[in-house]
Image 1 (cartoon, rainbow, N blue to C red):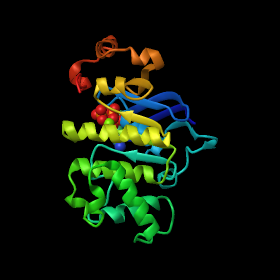
Image 2 (cartoon, rainbow, N blue to C red):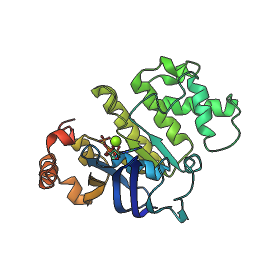
Image 3 (cartoon, rainbow, N blue to C red):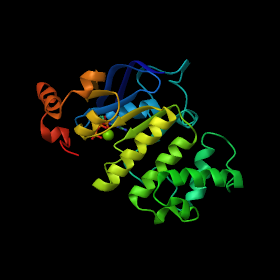
Image 4 (tube, helix red, strand yellow):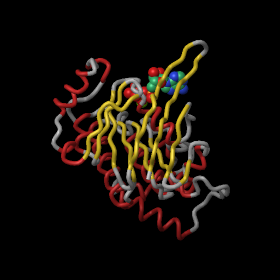
Length: 262
Ligand SMILES: Nc1ncnc2c1ncn2[C@@H]1O[C@H](COP(=O)(O)OP(=O)(O)OP(=O)(O)O)[C@@H](O)[C@H]1O
Ligand SMILES: [Mg+2]
């Protein structure tokens, strides 16, 4: 489904050269849910940016299903790749209403941006908002700027999945939320991923979450995948084992900023 071959990213800032991703090979099958952990600056966000197309690779190829998407611009990839980042403000247009945001999201990647909701779509969006179970269906005409961080991130999940992408990229998308909102967003994310059968890559600093969620876990360090476990091996691993794994690479807690508990 998703295949990265020999993908590297080198950022050149003046005379400085920063290798963010080193020759990564990664294959994900359709419907696979991958959690990604790693030290600060390990290259987790860059990896997702490369897949989304917002950062071009220095070397290597990225294929989605049977298509080489390495040179495909991000707005075209957005039809097939949904993305949610840490900042709840990033995924929405705050000055527009909930309904307008959803209308835009459903037209993502297409040229016509006629705003306004046809009644059929209005009914569909209402029904989708009802599924979130947080009363947002009664706020269709409210400006997104009036929503809380958790509500905005819930809306972002709905928007990211509305266009029925094949891949969902989550970059610490609960990190800016308080624990109860974070838990709500995780539950919501899992429900969407399961219902739509999305192939998912989720970056988290929460090791328990990385073990509990999904069916495969990779650990990154200095632009490389240093650990890749799936199935039974992932289900039975512990936070302690992951910490030991990091220690073997001389990665200390300060660098990790990992949360050992939920
Ligand atoms: N646009 C950029 N220009 C220059 N350097 C960059 C750029 N984006 C990322 N980097 C560098 O590439 C490396 C990997 O960054 P990245 O953001 O992918 O790390 P990360 O694993 O997501 O870290 P964190 O856990 O802090 O979010 C870092 O050294 C970072 O400073
Ligand atoms: Mg990051």
